[in-house]
Length: 80
Image (cartoon, rainbow, N blue to C red; front, side, top):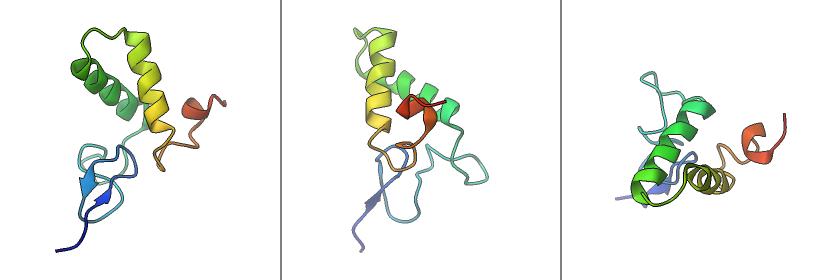
């Protein structure tokens, strides 16, 4: 058995490829940033129900800044 690697979008362990099934479309392509961000914010809110929406969004952006798929994305870096 090989060591699992991590999804470049969310960090979930996976055996092969760059992205997990949670981060890809039905055709296997990486979801658009807006969709992935919304889903990860929703996960953050479920994980920390007392957290404000703004804090959940900030925590998600901070996490995505460390992910190879998103670290250079304008919405993560604050660019255009």
